[in-house]
Length: 574
Image (cartoon, rainbow, N blue to C red; front, side, top):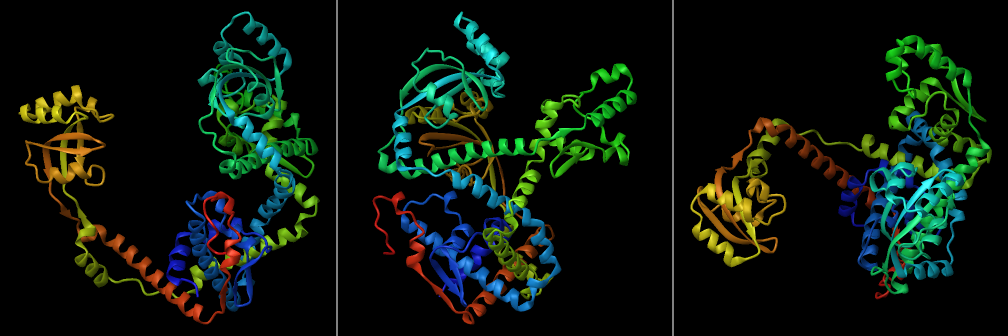
């Protein structure tokens, strides 16, 4: 039988709405059966993606998964109860499912076009590891055409400053800050065409023009050092495989987006653009017009018909002036194209409406009827049913009245007491004898602060004359505990903190203070209400669990753990 208490806590910590988008398929071994419903490893893994967590051992991973499986079992009980109440036939549920259908079409399209085309062989992993022998430091300049790259290369070869040219010409946005300096990096950090060249270079060498999908690169190798982060292959191969997969997926995603841009080209309605620019010129005096950016338009100056004018269109969709002017507010003003820069407008509208285009593509491929989409929609529907059941259909206890909240306040004064605080100035040094000598000879606050300004080693506090402000125990526990016993106007310490020796001057003290009941009444009400609801939900789970047949297959759960990540450990579930 599952651990009901842990499941209650977990399901309250993990909102159902947060995991709905992760619902998955129905393949793999069965890890649990709830009243005849089989929870497969695939559904469980999609409910609880382990890639975002780090574990110290296989047992740690199993324990966490076992806890999460309890949570999924609770959700299954909620779903069954929701079916019994007819929640599956509600209009509210149908609207939620319909509103999210496109998301699952995109999930499957991404799976087919990106994930399924990013497999990695053992040879690729080993080759990647071989390339990790060195880390390099390089600078680069990126431009949009080969002629510019060649011209800049000739200037660099003749001795002009790489940093200056990078700052002035590179289309890499970061070049305005780093002047082309990429810092130290290892294999896998750059696009393949660039890193293939960079890692073969020697310090001081300048590359010829290198073409990638980002443009034309000029590379200068600054330094080349052994990579101290490289470990034995066996200890790195799992992480390296995942890194290569992610890299391949990223590159394939970019390729696919380019393919879709070619398949669904955006056509700019130049008549609409001209109309907007003409209207804009009539709205403002010429001198004012010259000061206004040409890449924006005040939507409030347009009537309803003007807002509905088509600015761009493609096979299956279009964008109105209103949509465009609304969306570009999310883009930095310096990146917004002018209304007569048609190529730039095309790129921006393509990016803004990319999701719409991908949905069109998915539907035209017939993915609406794909078994994976149908399965994901079913699981999404059921998880939403569980959410509705949890929030709307499980009886909730009566809210606490004034008498109950007041009684809680009276019984737990420590929760509502502002702790005492102590205003201290500190001198922190690594030399204990020096600290003891200072404590012996300093007789005034002014002298203490003067000395702190000169000597204290606590980062950021020397310039403040060692002023730590009114401290609480949370941030400075060692100093706080001793300051409580130290009279105002005297020196306390030394006490060891941050591996050094601290003395402090107590300048002032505030006493602990009980907060007024009326000021915390609402917080108490909320806390007691949440506690009562959790207890009621726990009671519901306990009762429902007694009426439900639940089987858990721990061997199958162990099979979801990749023990290659834990080479020194044997599988405990075997």
